[in-house]
Amino acid sequence: MGAQNDHVEQPLVLTDAGRVRGFWRGECATFLGIPYARPPRGALRFQAPMRPEYREDIYDATRQGATPQRGATGITLIPEPSVPGPSTLNVNIFTPTTDPHAALPVIVYFHGGAYVSGSPASPWYDGRSFARDGVVVVTASYRLGFDGFGWIADAPSNRGVRDWLAALEWVQRNIRGFGGDPAQVTIAGQSAGAGAVVTLLGMPAAQHLFAGAWAMSATIGAIMPDEAERFGRMVAQEGGVEPTVAGWRSLTEKQVRLAAQDLIGMHDLHGAQAVLSGGLRLGPVVDGDLIPEPTVRALANGVGSDKPLVLGTTDDEFSMIVDDYRKWLRWLPAGLVLAVLGLPWKRRRAYLRANAELRRERGVPAAIGRFVTDALFRRHVVRIGRVRSATAGARTWAYRFEWVSPVRGWSLHCLDVPFFFDVLDAEGVEMIAGEDPPQDLADDVHGAAVRFAHEHAADWSPWTAGSAPSRVFTHPRPASREDLHAYDGAIPLA
Image 1 (cartoon, rainbow, N blue to C red):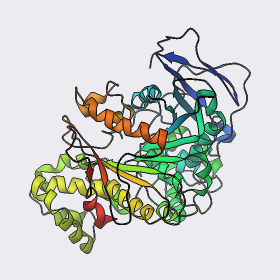
Image 2 (image 1 turned 60 degrees about the vertical axis):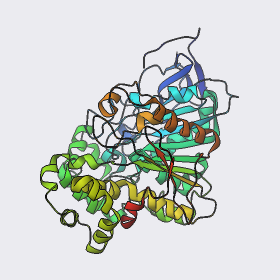
Image 3 (image 1 turned 90 degrees about the horizontal axis):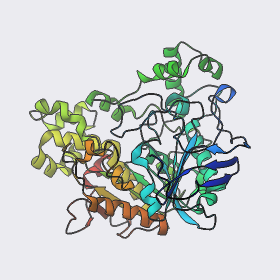
Image 4 (image 1 turned 30 degrees about the horizontal axis):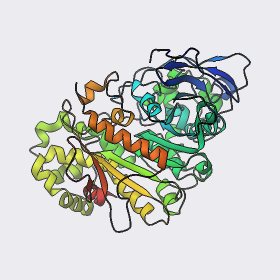
């Protein structure tokens, strides 16, 4: 993201915490690393985020801000650099104008990474193409891992969730200065970032902060307080400290991270089995306060029903997890493998019946990969689509990203992100999408997101109580762009 200054002066904006200076890249004004909260250090470590203090000098927003992620994690396929420094709660902004009267729609994007990794500094999250199309983009960091989501006896719960709220509140207070309209905010995200989106959609405390939502490959769960406490005590024991703020502050960032990392993870089929049976160990907690009830139940009760929603997945999200097991999976009955993965007999039978055609055409490895994908991602489209379709006024559109990577052999997790942002020339895209990814597919996916940001509507059929159409994003463009049965295979798991 080097500075290419086609304008005479660098863009300067007054925020409620002082002036910030960015840089122009062609017709895109870019501001990097603007603090939306004070550094979570010292007395603020493991506490709720606090608004930044006013500063008299001009803040230099021409380089990436510090990231909560420390070091490479290898969890995602997206290049997400780590940037050292204490001020880790910050936003990047991409806009075509700093006219406070422009009133452009805004997308606030939350990155993925299973709530333990990820970085808004990724070149895949460059909002320049959205700015070209009249949309202001904000990418936000948030505390990760145990810092953001771990249970501590005398600390606020859901600190990472509170960071999401603080970032959105900052946008409400300041986005006009960057050409945006605070009444036209769409929250968007992928993977855990999409989990953030649907969590916020179901939170009463967040309803005034956005007007629409776009969730890509959402992971949602319901970590209950007793589960969070049990895991928090396990991590404290691993770290050799009392499960209190004072105990945890006696450890360095690295020591906290190491204490938790051996107790979480999903890097192979065995890890997937653990996650499928027990869910994510760190993430939003149903604390009865900030998050009063599980997200799907909240949506069923009408929370967020006035907010239009687009959600979907890639076809093969985590199917690549079976690649190392192909040789022996091909000789095993699919039902036996599903039993080992913990699927009960009745649901196993229903699932095998619903996916019989896939098993016949692509074999047992693909069928097991699809099961992992369905269990972790696709079933949530069904669950959310169903409850929203039964709720008056809750407009909901679904999609499926079908295009298969020529270098990976799957329509895998993260593949849709560079198409959403229309950044096919960004660093690392060729590693997942090949040397010549189809621009017409980016035109379709990115174009749909641009339209949704402007109109809070999609140009395909919404889900209803009796119909579940999904827009198909693929290349070449299909004869019929809507699939009425896109998520049928995941229904037995919903």
